[in-house]
Length: 129
Image (cartoon, rainbow, N blue to C red; front, top):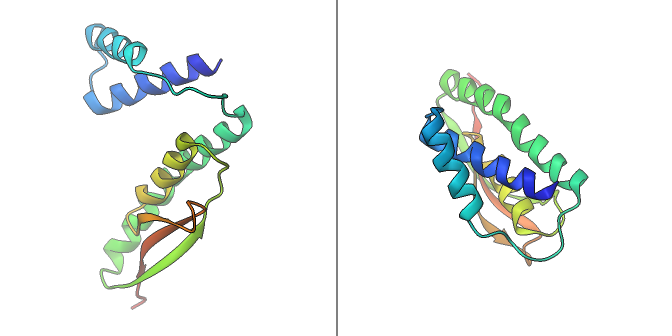
């Protein structure tokens, strides 16, 4: 099951990057997805992985809302905040958490702190008119 999810995610990323759904491109993307090395070690718990993917997908509408807020209030206050990671251990979960935070236009992950348990985030807060 994990192998199919991995190949599906890689193929979806290929399609998003290439923006081409023709059969030839899909075959190339499938070949790339199969040839890329896989991580070793124990598999991630499926509920934890699906929760992280769900939160990353839920950030897409939030990004649109923040973009409109940025358009309506072009003046912003800057601040650095430290966010606790929601995810357990694992590089894939860390990448999904960083993707979720960085996807929104008002936040950007600058790095990790405290042994990788917290994210250092640059945040813009739109000023009210």
